[in-house]
Length: 400
Ligand SMILES: Cc1cc2nc3c(=O)[nH]c(=O)nc-3n(C[C@H](O)[C@H](O)[C@H](O)COP(=O)(O)OP(=O)(O)OC[C@H]3O[C@@H](n4cnc5c(N)ncnc54)[C@H](O)[C@@H]3O)c2cc1C
Ligand code: SF4
Ligand code: SF4
Ligand code: SF4
Image (cartoon, rainbow, N blue to C red; front, top):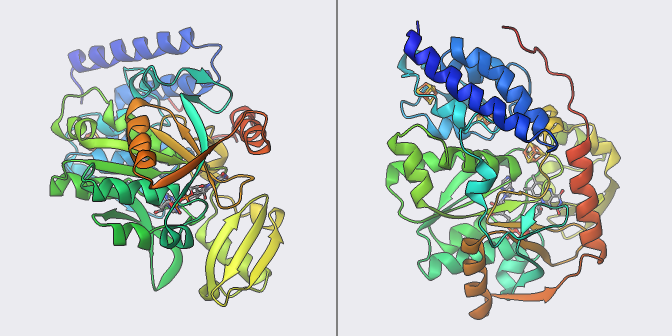
């Protein structure tokens, strides 16, 4: 049972959150703040782990970002099938870190966007605040061969590892047993970065590898993730409870690279899809989605199919998502409507510094892209569509 003082303290924070949501009433995120505020009522009664399990996972809108799992100082959660489970609930010390780190709840006392983006992010042309945007690609053949688009993400990581600007990076990889099933990985070398290059279109809980980085005491860390993971990263970096693990992430994550993302598919759904289009998943070398599904087989053959047939296997949690262009990342990357190049949106000064360093040393080549060019028009349209699409109904709501 909570003490009256604890309840009053929480109510005070909820009131601040409510006022924040009122101030942002014109903001498209207001609905999320509103949900957050209502769910906070449950937060008064319940312990953090229960709020996560009942209000986020239970209502069907948990993106699976794993921020709550990574930050919990007493390791309460297991992560199973894209969801946190409070397996060791007796270990919960009710510190609220998981609740504050959850981007679905928006309960942090701080304005996470203000904290994440600096004055370099001066423009907003419909794909999140940014300072500069280019088309870029790696100048190394081996990187281009392994990567999804222009190899920019891998080239930046390789460069930063080789120049000792970072000691490790959080990425995703697969295992030989399940080649299209992504898992989180902490990498320390250029070879490992290359092994992990390319995109997997089922959910990779990259943030789970943060825990390993923390436990191993990595000094300088880069994080790659889809937008919901970058949001989770930012929330956990800027959560207010003064507990060592939260401060650690704020101090040691040097920069983040977000990947544009319209949706991911369930693993079972993707397997069914391959069956429907007569492709053996073990024969797939690379999958790319560019308005259509492009499957490159290990024998070099390319199979092109319409996207519509795959769309029905979208992960239900993705239907709540409003962020297409990783709006809180230091650098955001995508490949829509381009071939062999990565659209590279630089949002912050740390992002700019890494990027300039890579360009000046010849690791990346770049060319300008205008807002009137086709990929940018499409990017703005897709961001708008994602922001404006209505949320699906929650499984349960406001059961206070
Ligand atoms: C699930 C998913 C959906 C995407 N949807 C879009 C889209 O709608 N429009 C668009 O323009 N671009 C999308 N992208 C981004 C695009 O596929 C490329 O990742 C991006 O253009 C960068 O290309 P690159 O060659 O520079 O990256 P690479 O050098 O190939 O590096 C890619 C990095 O992404 C990591 N990664 C791979 N799969 C995952 C995953 N599932 N989750 C987290 N990290 C992963 C890898 O470990 C690697 O570090 C998506 C990517 C993913 C993973
Ligand atoms: S982060 Fe804190 S409140 Fe959440 S489960 Fe762990 S110990 Fe409990
Ligand atoms: S922090 Fe991420 S994984 Fe945890 S409940 Fe929230 S959305 Fe789900
Ligand atoms: S659509 Fe959103 S919730 Fe789904 S994987 Fe992409 S960023 Fe995460």
